[in-house]
Length: 335
Image (cartoon, rainbow, N blue to C red; front, side, top):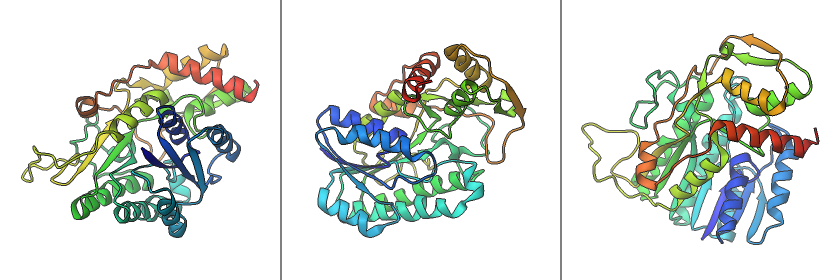
């Protein structure tokens, strides 16, 4: 198939592109390589993809409607995976307009391009952040998600609502994936695992929020990619079991689905840090701090729906995933 991936120089996007190329798909990567984090890491991911047959690349932003429309017209994608976004919960407190521009205006441009080009299926990144103030665990796609705690979370919930509208009005098949704390080699420098590893190696103290007591459903990158591909290959139709008298946010009478994609085995942050220390053979100096504004104390994914519909089975223990990341980090940075 011809598959367009936005955010192709990002962590998940680059790993997904390699997996699709491995199975023989043509891939057009689309990314603006913004400086939210180290551009040289994004470029290194992209350089590996540019060596591969079947891969092409366009450097532009989602907000650039003309560039996006030109990419769609030239490549004529059959399916689209939208992973480009302004990421980060804490940064949304500092620069809220970036989230409206990339995550809402940019997503509208994606929806319009998919509608105009009759794309078979749009898969897009939502986030576990949409669960916000919910405290019932594990988080289920059938739960209400009307209490976001950050503009980032609100922008992702907005994407789900926009996607449903286009699925309803134009019969555009869409699937949203609520990612749960993705980690692994080539990961993002603003994420905890990357920060911990870098600072411990440098002999610097690490900031441990919520005093290390909060839990996260850490999900290894290979498991995430497998779930994205399984979802991409399954074009949704109207849910025959949808009841408008008792509606669920996860499906509808339109060709629309939302799934959690996680490891469904939460790990306490203090344990996560122990695994980093073991992999490095070093002990961290810790600054124990309260929970940060916009953060949630716990996440846990109910992935029963994704497992039922696609056969998704995450199988990478956090002990294995952390060790693989640390090995990659030391090789990549020569430390």
